[in-house]
Length: 193
Image (tube, rainbow, N blue to C red):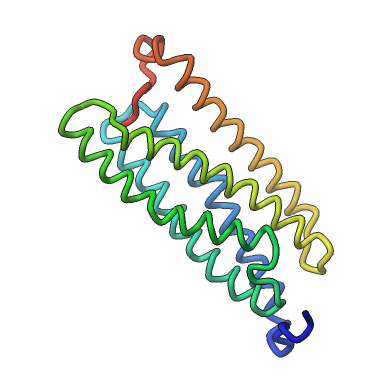
């Protein structure tokens, strides 16, 4: 493996690792779960644009995280030879389809004021990708655990945020399955825009 290491770029590793972990953590543990949560529970006009803003900001962070992650992995010779980089690349590639699913779903919703197969696809595809992104963050921390750039404080912060985000997704799923009948009475969306 040593032949794959770019030795002259090793000084860049700490800053690349920090940027990669921070922006991916913000995307998958804050912005994207927040967007999913707000579309379900925020009762304001045009909430879809709040959701869209959160998700596109998250996507921009993911793309920045992908770029810094690829650069980092190339320097240390770990690109696509471990679970973190493989799963991360798959999640990001899959995530690029999500805005199109959301656009199609929203256009149909505006026309019919009803959910559709596109709504189901958009909602569940997004939830699965967020969860996979959160899990992949843990794999990344595990991968970095033996390196000098590893931060126990960063691991704890990520674990807390990821746990809270996972819990919020669980609440959304429970409300979707069990609260659909009572959601309308309580002013909670059972079928988001």
